[in-house]
Image (cartoon, rainbow over all chains, first blue to last red; front, side, top):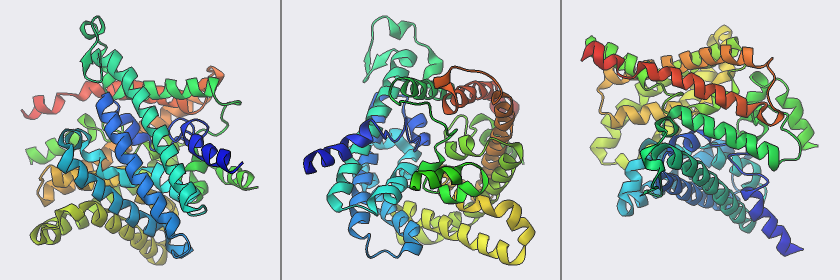
Length: 233
Length: 196
């Protein structure tokens, strides 16, 4: 029983609560770095490392951090992790560091990481939090990888940097540009809605999953606060 | 003067933060349902972007660089922005309650908005001087405003239309965003041709 629970936590992030396609968190890097599979992989790995570090640290400190100042504390921890990852990438994998550019420091404000800290790590044990981080990280990386594959194959006619014979002469350039990102992301979510979730999502945008939902509920999503209570019950 | 106009136009139209650089997608999708909310949010974003640039630029050049602490950029910037937003909210609440009522609710949301941190960092990486950095932030904010307002109009019309059940909600919104971002392609090269 214990073992299946642990496995469930790990698998949760990959399928049932896929951070990008189901929880709709971290949309900015998802759209921006999926022009090439290599970049997507780098981004996924970097975010997973940060997530693992922050989840473990927050879970260890969850009884020490006062509830009122928890968000700033989380942000400091996450920013420290991001800085470490940035330095490691800069030193060892410079090409990825260059390609990710601005989006590497922006992992700090990636909602997935703050969201998992708020939703999972501050309530669960260290081992569970680490598993959750790994699961979520794999889910994030896989989604990025799938999206980047679609965009790279159609848009550049290559995959993982290798040219694909027919497609590379007939590439659809727009797929690697901004509109392609939005469209592929939209279609992927629609496919997931169709085949993997039992009922179509009621909420327009996953407010209940956003770390700032409590504030957001006051303004944007009028129905969100009610929904949140329902979830809590 | 020419240079400043070029910076503003580039930031607002050619490199639109939302539609071509993918920064600040969360508020773009989350708060663009109604025009008044979209406007309020974008004005708050412009305000915070300007303020954050005015504070982070001097910190980078007068504190971090001379001390050789460039690698602390990420931590320092996010903390400064978070603290700043809180401070502004408290000040507004105390002294200008009217403004706080219309703008204040959006402020905490902006702390974790990647467009704000993004503009601060890209001002440094682009090696702008202080005036250029301020105008770049203003232009970026303006681009955000434009995208939000345009998109809230699109969404207003989209709400009432029928689409396949699995596309309802976010997917169809993203497809609409794709079409909107196509239109911004029209601006590519405009600035170069005018000022080149």
